[in-house]
Amino acid sequence: MSRICLDDPDLPLDTLLSRWPATTAVFMRHNMVCVGCMIAPFHTVIDACIEYNLDEDSFRAELHQAINS
Image (cartoon, rainbow, N blue to C red):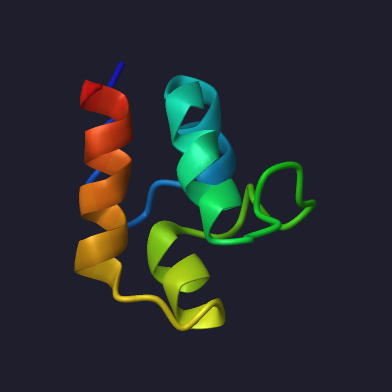
């Protein structure tokens, strides 16, 4: 079984949110409706950042901070 990595560009958002529930707060802080969205199994952080016009590196840094806090 492969190890789930937060920085995997192909990691679906629903997997990310399930594996690291603390990241939910990051999505909510940016008013992103990814949490519970029917598209979350198909979208990645890259897709979400494009959709919400967010800097991917900054957003990923916030996700890492939420996980490590």
